[in-house]
Image 1 (cartoon, rainbow, N blue to C red):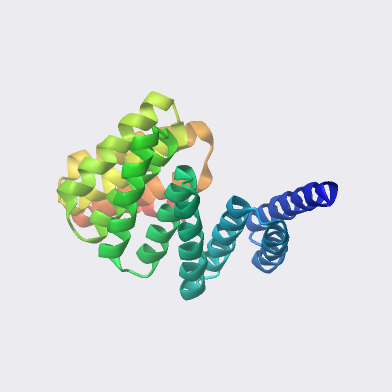
Image 2 (image 1 turned 120 degrees about the horizontal axis):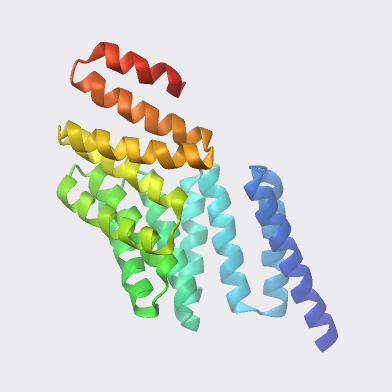
Length: 239
């Protein structure tokens, strides 16, 4: 019996890994199939943490499919179990996912609540990845609420952590986020400064999507200043 239980745990883990792989490849029906198999096996062996992880993974797939009611249902069920077993990293992960789902639904007050709760737990546990992610997510929510000073505060706090970690890609993304806020505040010199700093890193990384994002931002800043010739130097390159 113990051997069978151990075997099933391996099977559940294998299904989870396959599900995650299909998720990365954006093959969501296949991802869902394997995450549901993993959930079934975890339930058979009574592995609560495994059940909660599977529920969370299924919720993420439904989020990627834009089926937000189902995504919320699975992630909330995951959160409930994570809280029951006191697994703080799992709680933080579920809170973050739920915050992102509410953001996708444009329910910004609820999104903010969940991301702030995630940040609190991440700070308690000292999980730098979750702290950084939460700071950026909170910055995104405040940007959507047009509270640009608060948005900048959280983006800069996230940027500081990213620079300490030396994570060039996230630094470049943060530069873009900050550039967008300064553009919205009509502080065009600062907006351009951050977009150009982002562009430099994206070019170093040969990140085509990131390069396009930075070029688009630079073009938008010139467009907002009615500098049409300069805008046309950058916007077509972003396509």
